[in-house]
Image 1 (cartoon, rainbow, N blue to C red):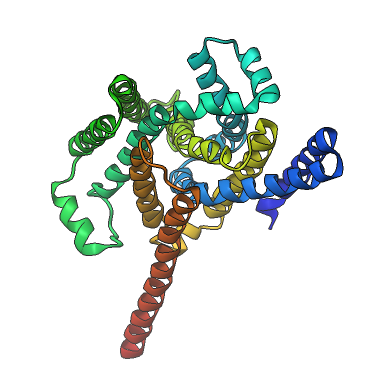
Image 2 (image 1 turned 180 degrees about the vertical axis):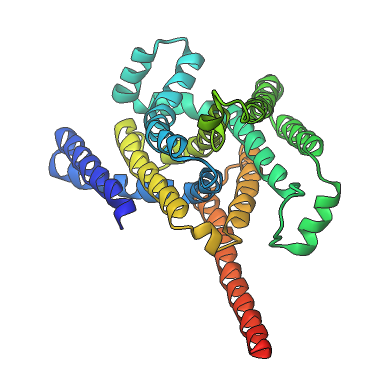
Length: 352
Protein backbone atom coordinates (compact mmCIF):
# COMPACT_ATOMS: atom_id res chain seq x y z
CA UNK A 1 0.00 0.00 0.00
CA UNK A 2 3.00 2.32 0.29
CA UNK A 3 2.76 3.12 -3.42
CA UNK A 4 -0.73 4.55 -2.81
CA UNK A 5 0.12 6.49 0.36
CA UNK A 6 0.40 9.88 -1.33
CA UNK A 7 -2.77 9.25 -3.33
CA UNK A 8 -4.76 8.74 -0.12
CA UNK A 9 -3.18 11.84 1.45
CA UNK A 10 -3.93 14.00 -1.61
CA UNK A 11 -7.46 12.54 -1.77
CA UNK A 12 -8.13 13.54 1.84
CA UNK A 13 -6.90 17.10 1.17
CA UNK A 14 -8.82 17.50 -2.09
CA UNK A 15 -12.01 16.02 -0.62
CA UNK A 16 -11.74 18.51 2.24
CA UNK A 17 -11.36 21.34 -0.29
CA UNK A 18 -14.36 20.04 -2.24
CA UNK A 19 -16.43 19.91 0.95
CA UNK A 20 -15.41 23.46 1.87
CA UNK A 21 -16.23 24.70 -1.65
CA UNK A 22 -19.68 23.09 -1.53
CA UNK A 23 -20.39 24.38 1.99
CA UNK A 24 -19.41 27.95 1.04
CA UNK A 25 -21.92 27.96 -1.81
CA UNK A 26 -24.87 25.89 -0.54
CA UNK A 27 -24.26 25.03 3.10
CA UNK A 28 -24.49 21.46 4.37
CA UNK A 29 -26.42 20.09 1.34
CA UNK A 30 -23.77 21.63 -0.92
CA UNK A 31 -21.01 20.03 1.15
CA UNK A 32 -22.54 16.55 0.84
CA UNK A 33 -23.24 16.97 -2.86
CA UNK A 34 -19.70 18.22 -3.54
CA UNK A 35 -18.16 15.25 -1.72
CA UNK A 36 -20.35 12.79 -3.60
CA UNK A 37 -19.68 14.27 -7.06
CA UNK A 38 -15.95 14.58 -6.40
CA UNK A 39 -15.80 10.90 -5.46
CA UNK A 40 -17.74 9.91 -8.60
CA UNK A 41 -15.38 11.96 -10.80
CA UNK A 42 -12.36 10.32 -9.19
CA UNK A 43 -13.74 6.85 -9.97
CA UNK A 44 -14.64 7.98 -13.53
CA UNK A 45 -11.09 9.17 -14.15
CA UNK A 46 -9.56 5.93 -12.86
CA UNK A 47 -11.89 3.79 -14.98
CA UNK A 48 -11.10 5.80 -18.12
CA UNK A 49 -7.35 5.94 -17.51
CA UNK A 50 -6.40 2.54 -16.08
CA UNK A 51 -5.17 1.41 -19.48
CA UNK A 52 -3.13 4.62 -19.58
CA UNK A 53 -1.39 3.51 -16.37
CA UNK A 54 -0.53 0.13 -17.90
CA UNK A 55 0.93 1.70 -21.05
CA UNK A 56 2.86 4.27 -18.99
CA UNK A 57 4.30 1.43 -16.91
CA UNK A 58 5.28 -0.54 -20.04
CA UNK A 59 7.38 2.46 -21.14
CA UNK A 60 8.73 3.46 -17.71
CA UNK A 61 9.99 -0.05 -16.89
CA UNK A 62 12.84 0.55 -19.38
CA UNK A 63 13.78 3.95 -17.97
CA UNK A 64 16.37 4.80 -15.34
CA UNK A 65 15.40 6.36 -11.99
CA UNK A 66 16.08 9.94 -13.11
CA UNK A 67 13.52 9.87 -15.92
CA UNK A 68 11.04 7.78 -13.94
CA UNK A 69 11.02 10.25 -11.05
CA UNK A 70 10.87 13.21 -13.42
CA UNK A 71 7.76 11.84 -15.13
CA UNK A 72 6.12 10.75 -11.87
CA UNK A 73 6.64 14.21 -10.29
CA UNK A 74 6.72 16.87 -12.99
CA UNK A 75 4.55 14.73 -15.23
CA UNK A 76 1.77 14.42 -12.66
CA UNK A 77 1.74 18.20 -12.16
CA UNK A 78 1.31 18.66 -15.90
CA UNK A 79 -1.40 15.99 -15.94
CA UNK A 80 -3.37 17.49 -13.04
CA UNK A 81 -2.99 21.23 -13.55
CA UNK A 82 -2.12 21.36 -17.22
CA UNK A 83 -4.53 18.91 -18.81
CA UNK A 84 -7.37 18.86 -16.26
CA UNK A 85 -7.46 22.65 -15.74
CA UNK A 86 -5.31 24.75 -18.07
CA UNK A 87 -5.91 22.96 -21.38
CA UNK A 88 -9.73 23.29 -21.25
CA UNK A 89 -9.29 26.98 -20.37
CA UNK A 90 -6.99 27.44 -23.38
CA UNK A 91 -9.54 25.82 -25.70
CA UNK A 92 -12.35 28.11 -24.50
CA UNK A 93 -10.03 31.14 -24.69
CA UNK A 94 -9.16 30.30 -28.30
CA UNK A 95 -12.84 29.81 -29.17
CA UNK A 96 -14.05 33.04 -27.56
CA UNK A 97 -11.06 35.34 -27.99
CA UNK A 98 -11.03 36.02 -24.24
CA UNK A 99 -8.00 35.96 -21.97
CA UNK A 100 -7.32 33.02 -19.67
CA UNK A 101 -8.28 35.05 -16.59
CA UNK A 102 -11.59 36.02 -18.18
CA UNK A 103 -12.27 32.40 -19.09
CA UNK A 104 -11.49 31.34 -15.51
CA UNK A 105 -14.06 33.86 -14.23
CA UNK A 106 -16.53 32.50 -16.80
CA UNK A 107 -15.91 28.97 -15.52
CA UNK A 108 -16.56 30.06 -11.92
CA UNK A 109 -19.40 32.55 -12.48
CA UNK A 110 -21.11 31.07 -15.54
CA UNK A 111 -20.23 27.36 -15.74
CA UNK A 112 -23.02 26.61 -18.23
CA UNK A 113 -21.52 29.03 -20.74
CA UNK A 114 -18.02 27.63 -20.13
CA UNK A 115 -19.29 24.07 -20.59
CA UNK A 116 -21.03 25.03 -23.82
CA UNK A 117 -17.87 26.51 -25.34
CA UNK A 118 -15.84 23.50 -24.27
CA UNK A 119 -18.19 20.86 -25.63
CA UNK A 120 -18.60 22.79 -28.90
CA UNK A 121 -14.98 21.95 -29.67
CA UNK A 122 -15.16 18.32 -28.61
CA UNK A 123 -14.97 17.12 -32.23
CA UNK A 124 -11.58 18.77 -32.83
CA UNK A 125 -10.15 17.42 -29.58
CA UNK A 126 -11.56 13.94 -30.27
CA UNK A 127 -10.02 13.89 -33.76
CA UNK A 128 -6.63 14.90 -32.33
CA UNK A 129 -6.74 12.36 -29.49
CA UNK A 130 -8.21 9.62 -31.68
CA UNK A 131 -5.44 9.97 -34.27
CA UNK A 132 -2.68 9.90 -31.65
CA UNK A 133 -4.13 6.95 -29.73
CA UNK A 134 -4.83 4.95 -32.88
CA UNK A 135 -1.16 5.28 -33.87
CA UNK A 136 -0.13 4.09 -30.40
CA UNK A 137 -2.30 0.98 -30.82
CA UNK A 138 -1.37 0.24 -34.45
CA UNK A 139 2.37 0.55 -33.91
CA UNK A 140 2.11 -1.84 -30.98
CA UNK A 141 0.05 -4.23 -33.10
CA UNK A 142 2.51 -4.02 -36.02
CA UNK A 143 5.61 -4.42 -33.84
CA UNK A 144 7.51 -7.37 -35.33
CA UNK A 145 9.84 -7.55 -32.31
CA UNK A 146 7.07 -8.75 -29.98
CA UNK A 147 7.94 -12.24 -28.84
CA UNK A 148 4.56 -13.04 -27.31
CA UNK A 149 1.13 -12.63 -28.91
CA UNK A 150 -2.18 -12.47 -27.09
CA UNK A 151 -4.68 -13.04 -29.93
CA UNK A 152 -2.15 -15.15 -31.82
CA UNK A 153 -3.88 -15.79 -35.15
CA UNK A 154 -4.84 -12.13 -35.55
CA UNK A 155 -1.59 -10.54 -34.38
CA UNK A 156 0.61 -12.84 -36.44
CA UNK A 157 -1.46 -12.13 -39.55
CA UNK A 158 -1.48 -8.34 -39.26
CA UNK A 159 2.17 -8.40 -38.24
CA UNK A 160 3.05 -9.79 -41.66
CA UNK A 161 1.67 -6.72 -43.45
CA UNK A 162 1.81 -4.00 -40.80
CA UNK A 163 4.34 -1.17 -40.78
CA UNK A 164 4.64 2.39 -39.45
CA UNK A 165 3.64 3.65 -42.89
CA UNK A 166 0.45 1.58 -42.86
CA UNK A 167 -0.31 2.81 -39.34
CA UNK A 168 -0.07 6.45 -40.49
CA UNK A 169 -2.23 5.67 -43.55
CA UNK A 170 -4.96 4.07 -41.41
CA UNK A 171 -4.86 6.96 -38.93
CA UNK A 172 -5.25 9.53 -41.73
CA UNK A 173 -8.11 7.54 -43.29
CA UNK A 174 -9.80 7.50 -39.86
CA UNK A 175 -9.38 11.28 -39.61
CA UNK A 176 -10.96 11.68 -43.05
CA UNK A 177 -13.83 9.41 -41.98
CA UNK A 178 -14.42 11.52 -38.86
CA UNK A 179 -14.25 14.68 -40.93
CA UNK A 180 -16.99 13.40 -43.25
CA UNK A 181 -19.29 12.97 -40.24
CA UNK A 182 -19.18 16.72 -39.61
CA UNK A 183 -21.17 19.53 -41.24
CA UNK A 184 -19.39 21.44 -43.99
CA UNK A 185 -18.33 24.36 -41.82
CA UNK A 186 -16.62 22.08 -39.27
CA UNK A 187 -14.82 19.70 -41.62
CA UNK A 188 -11.61 21.71 -42.02
CA UNK A 189 -11.16 22.21 -38.27
CA UNK A 190 -11.59 18.49 -37.58
CA UNK A 191 -9.20 17.58 -40.42
CA UNK A 192 -6.53 19.96 -39.11
CA UNK A 193 -6.91 18.64 -35.55
CA UNK A 194 -6.61 15.01 -36.66
CA UNK A 195 -3.60 15.64 -38.91
CA UNK A 196 -1.99 17.56 -36.03
CA UNK A 197 -2.40 14.47 -33.84
CA UNK A 198 -0.62 12.36 -36.47
CA UNK A 199 2.18 14.93 -36.89
CA UNK A 200 2.77 15.23 -33.14
CA UNK A 201 2.98 11.44 -32.79
CA UNK A 202 5.51 11.25 -35.64
CA UNK A 203 7.46 14.22 -34.29
CA UNK A 204 7.69 12.86 -30.76
CA UNK A 205 8.75 9.42 -32.01
CA UNK A 206 11.38 11.05 -34.25
CA UNK A 207 12.75 13.10 -31.36
CA UNK A 208 12.88 10.03 -29.12
CA UNK A 209 14.66 8.03 -31.82
CA UNK A 210 17.12 10.88 -32.45
CA UNK A 211 18.11 10.99 -28.81
CA UNK A 212 18.41 7.19 -28.64
CA UNK A 213 20.96 7.33 -31.48
CA UNK A 214 23.19 9.43 -29.23
CA UNK A 215 23.24 6.93 -26.40
CA UNK A 216 26.84 5.98 -27.15
CA UNK A 217 28.00 9.57 -26.67
CA UNK A 218 29.66 9.53 -23.21
CA UNK A 219 28.54 13.09 -22.48
CA UNK A 220 24.85 12.31 -22.72
CA UNK A 221 24.56 8.54 -22.90
CA UNK A 222 24.30 7.93 -19.17
CA UNK A 223 21.36 10.30 -18.86
CA UNK A 224 19.27 9.23 -21.86
CA UNK A 225 20.19 5.56 -22.28
CA UNK A 226 17.05 4.48 -20.46
CA UNK A 227 14.86 7.52 -20.90
CA UNK A 228 14.76 10.74 -22.90
CA UNK A 229 12.94 14.00 -23.36
CA UNK A 230 11.33 12.42 -26.41
CA UNK A 231 9.90 9.60 -24.32
CA UNK A 232 8.81 12.10 -21.68
CA UNK A 233 6.93 14.15 -24.28
CA UNK A 234 5.42 10.96 -25.72
CA UNK A 235 3.91 10.00 -22.35
CA UNK A 236 2.69 13.56 -21.74
CA UNK A 237 0.87 13.70 -25.09
CA UNK A 238 -0.49 10.21 -24.46
CA UNK A 239 -1.85 11.35 -21.10
CA UNK A 240 -3.34 14.43 -22.76
CA UNK A 241 -5.17 12.25 -25.28
CA UNK A 242 -6.65 10.20 -22.43
CA UNK A 243 -7.41 13.00 -20.00
CA UNK A 244 -9.54 15.29 -22.14
CA UNK A 245 -12.07 12.52 -22.62
CA UNK A 246 -12.47 12.48 -18.84
CA UNK A 247 -12.82 16.28 -18.75
CA UNK A 248 -15.62 16.24 -21.33
CA UNK A 249 -17.32 13.34 -19.54
CA UNK A 250 -17.13 15.20 -16.24
CA UNK A 251 -19.37 17.97 -17.57
CA UNK A 252 -22.11 15.37 -18.02
CA UNK A 253 -22.07 15.08 -14.22
CA UNK A 254 -21.52 18.67 -13.07
CA UNK A 255 -20.69 22.11 -14.49
CA UNK A 256 -18.71 23.18 -11.42
CA UNK A 257 -15.17 23.51 -12.79
CA UNK A 258 -13.60 23.50 -9.31
CA UNK A 259 -15.27 20.21 -8.38
CA UNK A 260 -14.30 18.77 -11.78
CA UNK A 261 -10.65 19.72 -11.27
CA UNK A 262 -10.58 18.27 -7.75
CA UNK A 263 -12.30 15.02 -8.72
CA UNK A 264 -10.15 14.41 -11.81
CA UNK A 265 -7.02 15.30 -9.84
CA UNK A 266 -7.87 12.56 -7.34
CA UNK A 267 -8.28 10.09 -10.20
CA UNK A 268 -5.01 11.24 -11.79
CA UNK A 269 -3.14 10.64 -8.53
CA UNK A 270 -4.43 7.07 -8.30
CA UNK A 271 -3.49 6.47 -11.94
CA UNK A 272 0.03 7.65 -11.05
CA UNK A 273 0.11 5.30 -8.05
CA UNK A 274 -1.03 2.39 -10.21
CA UNK A 275 1.73 3.23 -12.69
CA UNK A 276 4.33 3.16 -9.89
CA UNK A 277 2.93 -0.11 -8.56
CA UNK A 278 3.06 -1.77 -11.97
CA UNK A 279 6.65 -0.60 -12.55
CA UNK A 280 8.22 -1.48 -9.23
CA UNK A 281 6.27 -4.67 -8.48
CA UNK A 282 7.09 -6.19 -11.86
CA UNK A 283 3.40 -6.79 -12.50
CA UNK A 284 3.81 -6.53 -16.27
CA UNK A 285 6.36 -9.35 -16.19
CA UNK A 286 4.04 -11.44 -14.06
CA UNK A 287 0.88 -10.78 -16.09
CA UNK A 288 2.33 -10.93 -19.59
CA UNK A 289 -0.81 -10.01 -21.55
CA UNK A 290 -1.71 -6.96 -19.47
CA UNK A 291 0.20 -4.66 -21.80
CA UNK A 292 -1.60 -6.21 -24.78
CA UNK A 293 -5.00 -5.64 -23.16
CA UNK A 294 -4.14 -2.02 -22.44
CA UNK A 295 -3.19 -1.35 -26.05
CA UNK A 296 -6.37 -3.00 -27.34
CA UNK A 297 -8.28 -0.76 -24.91
CA UNK A 298 -6.43 2.21 -26.41
CA UNK A 299 -7.48 1.10 -29.89
CA UNK A 300 -11.13 0.90 -28.85
CA UNK A 301 -10.88 4.32 -27.17
CA UNK A 302 -9.41 5.78 -30.36
CA UNK A 303 -12.35 4.46 -32.41
CA UNK A 304 -14.80 5.75 -29.80
CA UNK A 305 -13.20 9.19 -29.96
CA UNK A 306 -13.51 9.27 -33.75
CA UNK A 307 -17.16 8.19 -33.54
CA UNK A 308 -17.86 10.77 -30.82
CA UNK A 309 -17.28 13.67 -33.20
CA UNK A 310 -20.85 13.01 -34.36
CA UNK A 311 -22.43 10.40 -32.09
CA UNK A 312 -22.91 10.55 -28.33
CA UNK A 313 -21.02 7.72 -26.66
CA UNK A 314 -21.93 7.26 -22.96
CA UNK A 315 -19.00 7.67 -20.58
CA UNK A 316 -19.88 4.39 -18.85
CA UNK A 317 -19.47 2.53 -22.14
CA UNK A 318 -16.08 4.14 -22.78
CA UNK A 319 -14.84 3.22 -19.32
CA UNK A 320 -16.21 -0.32 -19.30
CA UNK A 321 -14.94 -1.17 -22.78
CA UNK A 322 -11.37 -0.43 -21.75
CA UNK A 323 -11.77 -2.17 -18.42
CA UNK A 324 -13.14 -5.28 -20.15
CA UNK A 325 -9.97 -5.66 -22.23
CA UNK A 326 -7.82 -5.21 -19.12
CA UNK A 327 -9.75 -7.87 -17.19
CA UNK A 328 -9.73 -10.39 -20.06
CA UNK A 329 -5.99 -9.87 -20.58
CA UNK A 330 -5.44 -10.36 -16.85
CA UNK A 331 -7.41 -13.62 -16.97
CA UNK A 332 -5.44 -14.75 -20.04
CA UNK A 333 -2.18 -13.97 -18.22
CA UNK A 334 -3.19 -16.12 -15.24
CA UNK A 335 -4.12 -19.01 -17.53
CA UNK A 336 -0.81 -18.62 -19.38
CA UNK A 337 1.16 -18.72 -16.13
CA UNK A 338 -0.67 -21.87 -15.01
CA UNK A 339 -0.06 -23.57 -18.36
CA UNK A 340 3.66 -22.72 -18.30
CA UNK A 341 3.94 -23.90 -14.68
CA UNK A 342 2.22 -27.19 -15.58
CA UNK A 343 4.57 -27.72 -18.54
CA UNK A 344 7.63 -27.00 -16.38
CA UNK A 345 6.38 -29.42 -13.71
CA UNK A 346 5.84 -32.10 -16.37
CA UNK A 347 9.34 -31.60 -17.78
CA UNK A 348 10.82 -31.71 -14.27
CA UNK A 349 8.96 -34.94 -13.54
CA UNK A 350 10.26 -36.58 -16.72
CA UNK A 351 13.87 -35.51 -16.19
CA UNK A 352 13.76 -36.20 -12.46
